[in-house]
Length: 117
Length: 112
Image (cartoon, rainbow over all chains, first blue to last red; front, side):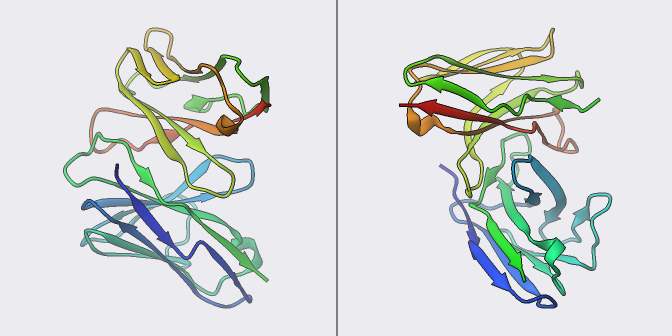
């Protein structure tokens, strides 16, 4: 089956630090990747849609300058949380969809637990 | 009204029970329906994927879609403690412009 790798799985850092999270599709090309945020016991909240070779599309209320997304290749998207603060602490999950299979389901990475002290 | 409604539970059942998980939705344009399983501190894992109405079976899991009632279900037969997880329903429309909409997730506990 499709595999999506997300790294790192856990980050603990000081307030003001910028943190980069990588999302890779290991056995398929992904034109589109998605970044979600999940609070404890809550569902997934879509933050942005990452499109290879173009700017990401952000959901309403998500700060573009705070959450920088780069999708430089068909197998890699990165999310950088800039100048992170304690309120940015959360579980961040990426997902990817196979290229040219827009109606196929997304496959998820294992998430990154971010803790800002 | 949310586009997708899912009871968050928790739902607690004894080992071996048949589990029924459900979602309702309001957007008649949804055509693709999915169920994901999410273990604690992990990403969601795709369990079932169906198009339009009907049933789909895979081992102990059966997914049902009733588009006339805007109601989908996931049945788990002979439930095991390892089935304890959060189950998320998800759905999307038929064109690339549609986003996938997720339910809130139902927490399931299967007691040995």
